[in-house]
Image (cartoon, rainbow, N blue to C red):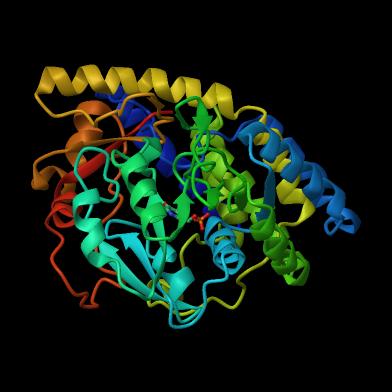
Length: 413
Ligand SMILES: *Cc1c(COP(=O)(O)O)cnc(C)c1O
């Protein structure tokens, strides 16, 4: 190991810390990543790093799926290595195929359209509303054609989307399947039921910046027996990740804990960064940004990841409670500073993965103000309404454009 390098980065880090202390600045920013990782998650990662022979044991994964389904009050759930791969399974579950069309919100993450495009399914974008950043019902119907087979709606930032019921009705009237993107909203409630139970299939994410955290991971759920039988067909044929991937994912978990969360990170961060940075997994790769299919795609979950998922699931209600409390503070902050708070529709209980606010576009472009004034790292999801960002999609999307320019989001943990 290169001790000289560690020592020099430690010294540099302490210089910054001292400077911050001296100027009464916070030592740490509230970061958007990996806030749900705790010591017990690291202990689990360490335990599983030593249990290689059990990495492909299906029992732990089954256990995680059963627990998740029960917690989510869904009939069935199956675990994959990411939310996007769970979505891809869901698409198979709905029997969508080449030539079909699907409607999705214009303001989303590129991996969502990718999951359809990889299968030759045409994606049609619909503009969003600016109260909850979900699909705008008024723009929806005109996009439905005879080839349209499904609508994907999302509950962004952990909030239940404004036109939820109306979209379900429009889908029903036009005989379209509904996919719920719950990547931000695991645990959010509408009319006493968790989101993800209203459409035909739903997917969830346990990527490191989401509601609960296995570094990367996803779940697909359904309450429909026929869809479930197609899902199990997909699941049985799916590959598992290789050992190298699993090892890297467990080491990435450790790295994230010591970088963003450990109370001793002022000291430990440079050491762990030096030791583990080279193992770090990237959540969205360059090839995905160019809409190329990654080498590994469609993998079901391996045991160590499920074990961490089980541990995180036991804590998710507590974390969501904390997020809701923090959201109240952001709500007051908005009132005081004359910004509009996001809308919470009747009978909805958001989980507030992040707290979204429309601000002046300069405040999104340069987030330094948030660091200085609020001691936080400002979130900027999403920075493009076009996927990939240089592609031309038909139609105008004034609200999505506005959100791309002006919607920032605050951390809630
Ligand atoms: C993160 C995200 C996904 C994909 O989840 P992964 O687990 O990262 O694959 C899907 N939709 C939205 C809106 C997301 O933010």
